[in-house]
Length: 465
Image (cartoon, rainbow, N blue to C red; front, side):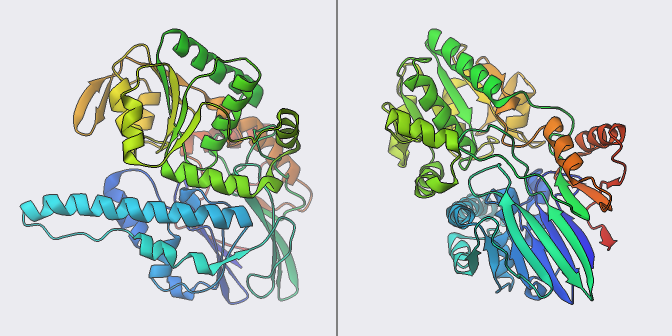
């Protein structure tokens, strides 16, 4: 058996891990690489393997850095099953269509410039039509439901507690009578996150592929982050300002809506307009509502006690049209605006930032990890000038960062996850989905706890098992 680390190796995005076993090829994830624009097309349009030779794909969850290159995989010849939990299949379907729409628009915009200069036209990475070809390939499997993606491999999903339907992937492999358990963490969630059940810790893996996005720092208790977010909103409202939150449309947006629901229902905040300005987030929320069986017990109790849904409350508006989005920026009263994209690289969030960033009454609230070379990272680093739609704007609004709202486990959770995997039979932990500094810090912490069989593979590395 061989494991090829083709993506999310020494970086966070572009997850792709190919396992060769029993003469078959099993691909864990098929994500989009996000980062420098100059690398985006070259890294995402060309696979390091032949998609036609892949026998099965397993998807841990719907986030684009894990699922976003599936249309390109299918476009280049993949025709077999894509295994996912029911919420993941539903969410990935709408997210891939949204990405295809964005890529087509971006290509059209760039081609207008290229025509003027007589330069060759470019093709979009993929389109909505390409995304539509992925959906029929999804094969839905619930948590703890064994299935055989390729011969000799029994797989099952267990709850990762990261977003709705997210999973770690457990592979029990029989290769010529040799039995091996490979545990792929996907993105590791946290205990006590809003809406979601707690993550399941590893049980007796021989090999653990573990994400390490926040290996350099522990997160505060989610309840502390909840209170900090509440205080950001309270002081901004007191100034008469707007809270603008760049948020991923799937997962983070729904958690923020649920938290604001709690705050307003319990009288911690005054009633005010709250806008979710993202068609994708609105569609994703509809899917969350269709899968309440994946919510945690606390959410069900809140819904029963208040006799109202978790993701709706008076004053909350989900917008779809461009006209509705523009109308928000003509309003001058205190409000919360949650919009995509989460890293401020595209979408409606850029318009809201352009209208609010130079007013000191307002707050830009960063609530998630920001990739290098993105506007979101520059804002989180408190750079004084933001370039939006070609215009340089002075950052006069307050910038608040709340790391504790992350749906990723922090250093403390990652150490707990690794410790749960550590038993006499554990042969190796491979750290993936993390930049070099967090990975190095986490490895040192693991060594202090006696966990020494740890590697940090580079992109393209292959290990024989």
